[in-house]
Length: 250
Picture 1 (cartoon, rainbow, N blue to C red):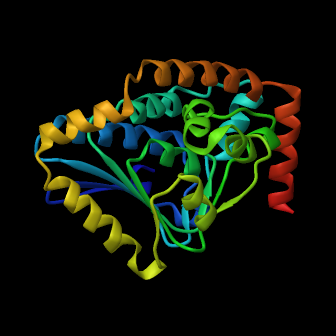
Picture 2: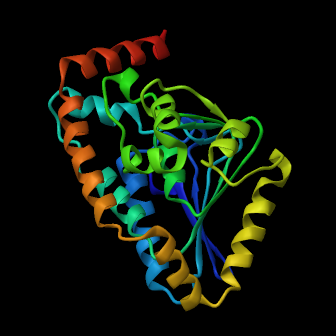
């Protein structure tokens, strides 16, 4: 259902809200497709100066919808929506700010590696259980996380699958600020408003200089996606996913 992604404008701010609270914002192929389209449309519209990502109270995102993973794991077609979104995310031309509350698993964590500012609440936990599910990191996180967190911090997040509290994430450089739940959206929108008020061309050049060439990031996303697709079809991943889904139903 595309209404699981709500896109709104507040002045020069484009807000992309993941809105599937009954599934803790587990992302489906349709949700990825709508977010990709929103990023492209916002980048193409001169009236938009900044993108904002929100989830719902208590859940930024619990990661990819595992039912989609199981389709691939059992021999079906996984589609390209996820990878199209990741490439779109890596190539966004305008600043991105995110507000994270509660669950931030898998893509719910790695999306923030692409954000220029991330605010999170004290109850937020960032976690990437890729290896636990027989999978590998995605969204260019195998490249970005070591740059941001250092080699050992990245391994703790992506290899061990340790949960990072909001305070630990801030100390590690994964997020910008920790704010109380009641003030999260106001803090994010205030920062986005400050960004939107900057001279846009000067800000774009400054942001591009800080980010550098995106060629290596896009290439890494491609390499990760190849491994990810292969792993989804492996006996190891199929067993891990089946065990996880069985526990959830039990």
